[in-house]
Image 1: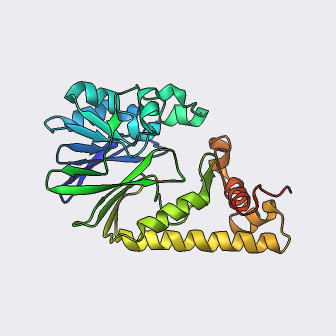
Image 2: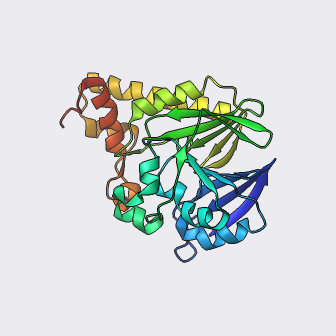
Length: 274
């Protein structure tokens, strides 16, 4: 499934794999002038290429190498001879996606992209009249970048935002490093966020501040309860509730308990045993 909308000079492509009438997870790609920021999932590739007909696509910027951001790199590069830019740490996985072992749910929802040829992005990139600062961020994946346009106060966040209140952490994420990067981003003047999951977030600076406040408070509560002697499992139940469908569908890849344990491990060197 693919839906197209516009925001100022941007064309926005919201896409996901349709399972009957159900789409379990939407992602967004953004076209600004001749540049695509991320390419979404390959399962929507035919619709995406059709929607791009008549558009000029000279360049792709990948915020990171994950399969829901690079899924149509190859076919767009083949069709438009588009250059692909990414952080140097993402390039090996963009070139050879099967070097990343996907979980079963990832294969069903996004699957492995075909490999594509990328080159290292510089510290600044010009897109038409816009000049973007390229910011390396941490905590979600290796080689993740955000793009900031200071005159428009736009921030393209890839997977660094994904909503204010997140109650799960992926097994390959780091809560403290993510929080630190978000705090750095919050020093920018931001009017609008462009998020892979949420799409256009107007009032993005406020939303980012709210997310940081939530993460700081959650971290503080977890550490306080631990210092009072509460075991990690009970901390999870009190603050986030028991594991739910997200945990079981992803085979534990997204986990409330891992969020708790990751924060405790960052503070104490390893997560305390129940």
